[in-house]
Image (cartoon, rainbow, N blue to C red; front, side, top):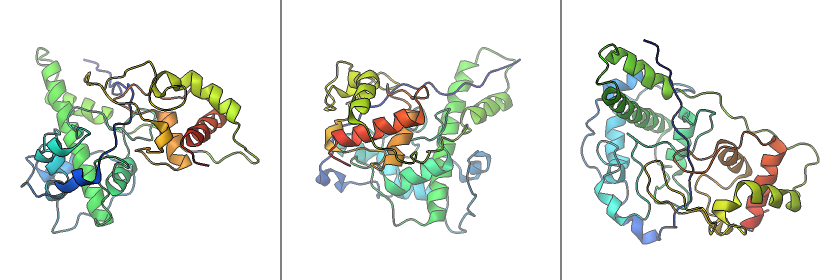
Length: 290
């Protein structure tokens, strides 16, 4: 039996409303007990990037329970008790796409997950974690990746329930292939002498972005997007400068080139590097940035 491994469906994202500082009082720092996923399963996690040795006294499960489970739940399904205090629903790692990626198949690299854990979701409810060591962050990234893999295995098992020819080994192989990062997007250097052209940027923005973000970037476009599960999502008001994936030109380049998986924001592989840079600087122009 030949089974094709497909990349997760990619729709598009909208920035959610900004949270108030007081709402983080419950935080993701509560310790809720051990996660149900066994730590030994981390051995099958396919990640890219350098491998950091596991500290002898720590495990991904312990770290997840201490820093993530309050919001994302003990199984990573986004059902932690702190979710009731948050304006943005915590990600369900078992069934939902990772938002901030740098690959052509919308699967995060280890570096993508590490960056999100380390920096948090800027202007969102997920805090940064500067207190964690590099080893601890890598362990967390691997554990979260494994939660996603097991969730996919569970869904595939149901999909193939009526097909006795498909073995669990094959299902695990399919899940591994789908969650293996593809080619990494390399952010190019700006061409020598490049100067943003507001007129060009505006034209590209109207064609590619205004239907959702609105003609002036205030998130008031005609399209009312939904996430991958059909839940309505708010469109980012670009004029606020609250870019959750990062405000640097290089981070914006990746968001525009790769899109935001699980949301209606599409990838822009049809645009040239220079056109992407024009969109990057026009987005920053709308936000009052240089």
